[in-house]
Image 1 (tube, rainbow, N blue to C red):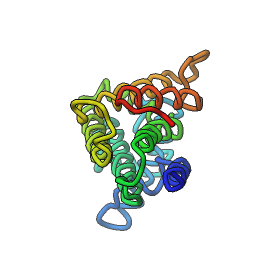
Image 2 (image 1 turned 45 degrees about the vertical axis):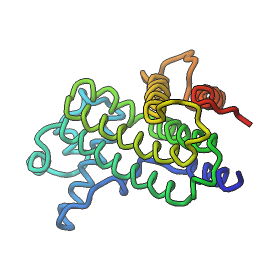
Image 3 (image 1 turned 135 degrees about the horizontal axis):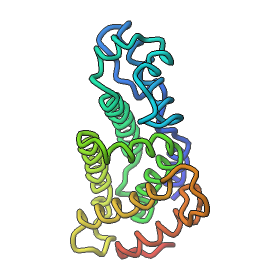
Length: 229
């Protein structure tokens, strides 16, 4: 249990969105710096002003990159937003893979696998609220971003499924793959709902509320046939 607690502690300190880590390096150093400037500026403006209110001209002024150079890399703002999420996704998946690799999950308790799964959902929703709010809003308007987001969630479910399989005999559900997906999408949906819209008052569910995560853990363990100890 001590290893699991240390594992959760290490994970909780992560900040998913990093201004340098989530940018895919370009082929040349100058192109890399230009791409970084554009993405950092676009992320800041999209979150602070809103996607619709932000123009390419403003991104150009903020990043000190000409509009022409921006259009050489991206066809429009939707392409920039997709690039932001794709790089965020790659960084996130790499960190999750690293966290998974640190432990022999066959030695962990089944309930600690559940806690790890939910901690990933809650920590990203809590730490990257503004960015994920942007992506949730834009994926409803951009079919390509919707597909990228869906693929990301499916990859995550498959990664978590492999952990659950390590303690398969502890879970009382006839189809573990279905169970992991249902648990993930329902809880992720609740976490996303809790951060939308910005500035909402008197919300019952808040990703910063410890009880939200505790009750969610209780619900998922019950669904999977586990008793919290």
